[in-house]
View 1 (cartoon, each protein chain N blue to C red):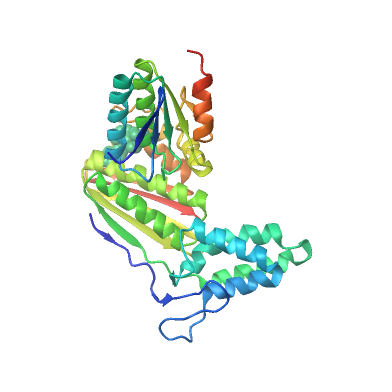
View 2 (view 1 turned 90 degrees about the horizontal axis):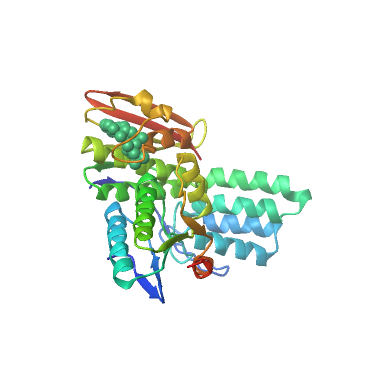
Length: 117
Length: 239
Ligand SMILES: Nc1ncnc2c1ncn2[C@@H]1O[C@H](COP(=O)(O)OP(=O)(O)OP(=O)(O)O)[C@@H](O)[C@H]1O
Ligand SMILES: [Mg+2]
């Protein structure tokens, strides 16, 4: 597994360290789905700062993560979308509709902690 | 996987010491591009600001002054222009920018085009990385790099997903303006409903149906030729 997943209380933090291939992204999705269920997590933070592109595939996969987490009772926050990546996403007509986003890891954690149960 | 991308035509290695002194490897008489940039900056800015600008640019491009190659100076030049605009006093600004642009023109390496065969999902990452490298060598700034890498990613994925295999070409062009031409070709079955896809009304079974239309939006020029014997997508991005 190329993306380390940390457990911080009831929250899982997936901290992407480098550009990912499609397969690695799918692995991350499956691994997170598994752990959210097993560890009964309340929240997932995905740090995408190091991702080089958020193209249609990556967007779809991240939406998939959020949706699966939601079915298992966990909220997802995506943090660290770089300005130029956000710009390309908008031009592509892609969005992370319905998924919370925050500037960085700290803000993402705060957001999850303040979320009403 | 087959990435054939010679970085520069005039490959040479230069060793540059951090403070002032420099050692040149091979020939010794060659002009040191980094040094020329620094001289120019120091003529218009305090040495401290000049140095911190240089260090920041090197860091951003993942370069170090110890192992500096021909062409690297140009990679950081595009990052320094903004600093020149910001920090040089108003009276000197126009002249400084003019000199800076002339210097950039002078140190610009000729970047070789790049060809990657696309045969598997893994090649999507390969060609994306090559695209980023090529953009940086051509001195592109982050938004332009993002456009190119995103387009390359979408087109490569379509090749893998719908044609099985194909080819991608990345061609840097400087005349009349600085741009990168991305050519994605395959011998698959073609796109049956191209007009619908480009109208934005298309509902994809396999994805979000955004790849081609998004590519068209991101590119400054865009063209698709498709038929029962294959597809060619050409996208141009101005740097
Ligand atoms: N190289 C190709 N050869 C054959 N058909 C293609 C090719 N590229 C695209 N297509 C067809 O055109 C459609 C639209 O492609 P596009 O990239 O816009 O969306 P998508 O691949 O379906 O979804 P997304 O890219 O958003 O994940 C595809 O669903 C596919 O049917
Ligand atoms: Mg596609």
